[in-house]
Length: 273
Ligand SMILES: [Zn+2]
Image (cartoon, rainbow, N blue to C red; front, side, top):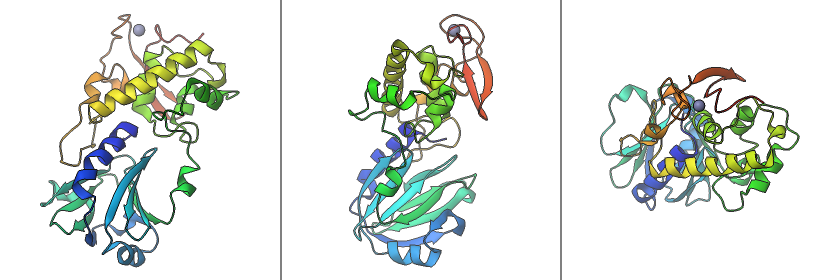
């Protein structure tokens, strides 16, 4: 599932390909991908518009349009945006095509069909519902501490809660907790000051490294040129990709389910104290 590093990579790599281009048409192979407004209104409002910028907030992408509308895209579980002149193979997973004035197209591929497109007038109504951006300078250990204070839910679940921190998903939550040696079941409010410090630093280190490596292609994530990212080669535990044993202590990596999400951790390095 695309998380902050994947969505950030998509944004960074789309920018030089689409900013300044005009949208000449939209083909909705699957109309259900548009959630707001009606399909007819969506198409009539975006066709003819220039893409003036792209920004990211959490796992959302916002295409800034000349009309002051924003085209919001959420890739959800399996979405990817491929920019090319020719349709990507296999074509059966392409749900929408945005045609541009230089004869290239943005193909929205999404095998599981959870991804969405919406037209919105302002970003704030969505942004205000999300927690802080973990890579921004204003995000400090004190902010993380405040977000977790008095919370009784498992830290793993809190990291995934977009209202607590924006952009973290299952992969990077597991990696950060492993690197910070914190058990995923620990109530968020029980973390000590040193633990919060470690979690803060590891979370940021891992997210930056994943952006450097252009995201993790563990399943259906692709970069806009159709290539894969390599962040998953650095995974120590996430998705079981780090192997069956812990690289630090040699003990077995375990998989448990925390609030319905498969979670990998090392019981020796991340004891539940
Ligand atoms: Zn270990």
